[in-house]
Length: 142
Image 1: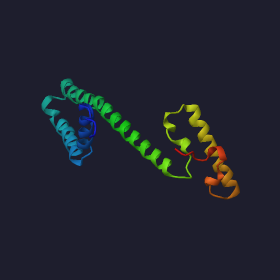
Image 2: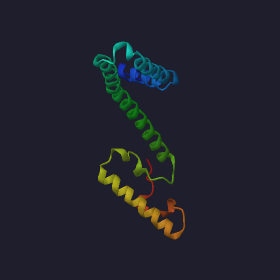
Image 3: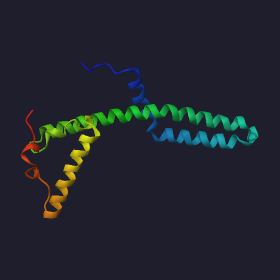
Image 4: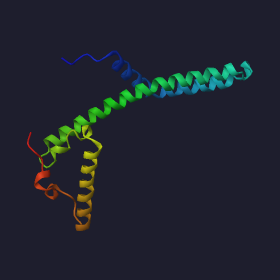
């Protein structure tokens, strides 16, 4: 049985689905038009302007957290899927699994190795392959 998701997770997922719809965009657009048209009735007052400023500020502030939650969940799922593909591919380097958890220095070292591998392959006019990796870089069994 799957663990119960938190109230915030369920709420963020629901909000994410609702805000991605064209009807939500149309509603937001209509709200802005309605606010603009109502300006003359309120004499273009400071209060009239404050309504839209306050509303958009609150919505923006709250949406930052919903968007970040969505990004975190999607990124984690993507990394897990990539890790599984690396794990089952016999020519892939298992050392790349969990790379997102390593320090910036370690990631830069791996990046440099790939840049060097690509430039070596380009110079030789060939596509980098599993054979291009040194014995220590070859995949390890799990």
